[in-house]
Each structure stands twice: as C-alpha cells, then as structure tokens.
Length: 161
Image 1 (tube, helix red, strand yellow):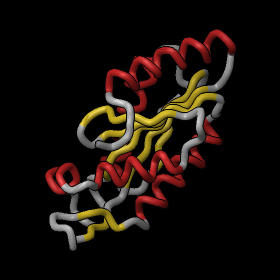
Image 2 (image 1 turned 90 degrees about the horizontal axis):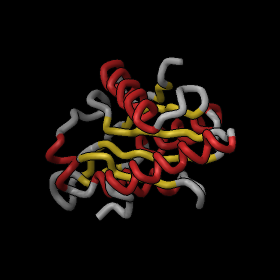
Image 3 (image 1 turned 120 degrees about the horizontal axis):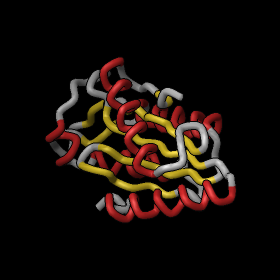
C-alpha cells in the first residue's frame, strides 16, 4: 500500500545496518516520524489511516531519501527511515525537509475532494552517538517522538545523549 518495508523487514534491516555500522565504525541514523497531535488541523487517526494520508507521507519521506536509504512503516501512523553513512547533522537536514514538505502538502481528507493540512514530527537517533544496539536506538527514537508529540508540531527532536 505505501511502498515501504513492513515492520518486521524494517527491524531486520535496522539490526543488520547497526551491526555493519558498529563493525566498520561508520555513522548510521534512524528517523522516526508521525503525525503531530497538535497543529494546523486537529489530528484524527481514522482520517489519516483511511484516506491515503499515510501513503502520501510515505511518498514525502521516500522522495527525500538516497538510493542507499530505506523507509518502513512501524505501525499505523509511525513511519521510519534508515540513513546509513549519515551523521546527526545530515539527518537533521533530512528530517527538517520532511517536516517542511509535509507542512506544505494538502493531504487527502475524508472525501476525495477534501484536503487537510497535517504536520509531522520527526525523531532522530544515531550510531555511535546514541548507542550500538538496534533495540536501544528504536526505543530512544520512540521516546523522542513522544516528547515531540507533547511539545508541538513540525518538530525535529534528537534523542538525549
């Protein structure tokens, strides 16, 4: 539906890429994105899930990735991107681009003619800054995303070091 890796395939790839990054001492960044629960229009999970908005966000994310990057859907409204050979500064640029593109996009609403404005928050974690373990990186990314969801919309949050 979205053209993204499913949760299991993405987690497997994350584990492989973390092992590779650790072994070769190379940077690796994980972005986790979701709809802002605050923002230009009130958040409605049913609308976002049911009418193509997830697919449209997937397109926005994939458009900003390189051939070596990968994107996946972790669950209903949470998407992720894996950026090998990318440090925090590079990931911050990619995450800000995703937020900016999403904020300027008119997503499909409840009907074919309805368009809604939605904002996206993105959390960033990286190896080696945030650890050497795929589960720990994912956990830290989810926690940073939760903080962003609480604090506002169109935010890019790095996990605490």
